[in-house]
Image (cartoon, rainbow, N blue to C red; front, side, top):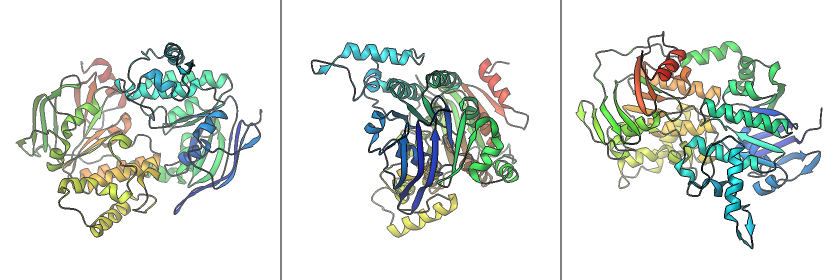
Length: 506
């Protein structure tokens, strides 16, 4: 076997009150796809940020091609051959695709940007991903999925020896994942070492040659993918045996029913918005979990945003608690007892510069109005209550929320809305990009909230998750709700996929 292109020994990284990496060893070889696995908070993101110069290590050694290196920043990491695409797309939406691809390394002629050459090279870069895209268009005119592919194209265009992909498929549909995997295999065959971070276990087993598992900031083990079953992998990630894993999954499974005669909290009749979502009908009762299923771009999020006033409907009517309601802004929805956890928790949810405490009380303070401030004593009490209730880690209310793992950030966002005691909780991809343990905890929480009488609208790309939690499932295709299916126990992912494929026709 060739020597590793990247090797880490005894890596240590500490934050105030948190030992994020505790003597971690790691090896990455040329021409392999290597999975970095572990729960949220296991140290995956911290390891990546040390390797890319975002964080400075507090101990240990990093070597590239056998030579010790001291990575001082992202630019230096790129110069020595480490290129990274993070889970959240960090590009400039107001610039063109071509400009985003070559920010900081634009081709120049006589000291000025050589625009025609930039566009030519950008077109070649996206063509290498088999992406049919006009590189002169603004980035924000494209879907999150396309923006993710542009970020990957930018990383690939650099002559990288190591390519780190942090949850690159979280916003991609099945065809786009297959397209990305084809590119990854070509790069692997050219000798590029690829570090792949994903919570989609099937994808890990499809594309990865080897894997490293972290747990609580420590190395749990390094394995060939074919030598470790998925159950064994999950057991090593969360430190539980098979029986406890099965009980954890079962804990989130819906077993209750909703009384058919219960008065609905929400009734949408022909609700729609031109260019976003075709008119649809929807009824949600207290204690009912209604799932929305569909492929990426099917209109799930657009349907939910109308119910929170984030977008305004231009047709149809909405009734809340039996009375007509016009939601012209989110504040009006909050006043009616509606809460909304956006799928884009970074841009539309959390405020990274604020503490866990400040993020948790934000919606409650907005509902009260800024003339009625929540006292610091009350803030502290509320924050500690929900940190304990949701097991947010670290359990420090003054920790900056940007320093938390993805799963714990999602819990902070849930705490923000649960503190308002909503009647309807809208969850848009609440478990995307978080680990198996945190996912099961959130599923258990949803089931408990429904049992206590809260209405829940649950959106997820994972059909098994939708079926596990929902009493009924609205199926969307091409920005149109094509069917609503009762989840009586006989409904399967195959049924939903057939409904999507047929457009709801028998």
